[in-house]
Image (spheres, rainbow, N blue to C red):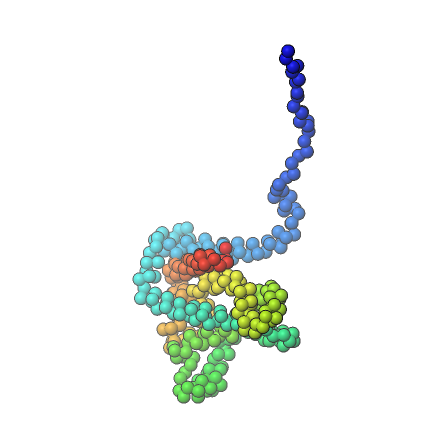
Length: 324
């Protein structure tokens, strides 16, 4: 005798299920919700679109024999001829050497001094004194290079400049500092330090403010002195910021600054003063070699891009934070 077979029915699924929540809103809804933030972003986007990306169309004349009357599209194509002429030019090694020497001097002297000044300001405990010193070191940044060069001419003027008399009296010489090629690079570096070192401390002071204060208290309890606290707590705490700023500084190595170099250049120190920025002006503007000067500027920009990506790769290679 067989047992009766009982038929079982699978439970019926609900006829209607609640719709799954949307994982992502549409762009229109998102834009409507954050419209004021996008509106604040608009001026910055317009600036970069008009003044940064828009002029890139004109870079194409670096590969053409540009004639103003024919326009960018009508000028004949010459390929890499201007780059070949530039690399074969006898001035190229001198320009490259002068630019790199100034870049490494600024990077090796001015950049570390910015960090040192930020560390010193961070150690000042008297609030009034700290704000006063910060204001004083920020002010030179807002002066134009024309004013800085004029002050240099007054201070180092031949026979009457107070710093001219001090330096020559100290070394027992009678050298025209403004015209001597040996003094050109020290003057440029000193101007850069005086003008921009204080302003560069802003980012590092902001990074120093994020360092955990409990670590300092623990170090003080353990008997660590001020120097050891700076070395083992402060510097590691701002290491990522230092690396990012260093990558950006290396990417700008070939941008030595046209205004400063041009104002301090004269016929006697031109052998060490000519850099890529001033060369582009003299060749492109004064001599009308628009395509050739554009090729020089494009070469400088490409080198900057390679330096940024290369430095960022090295930073990642050594397990450090990078720019991207």
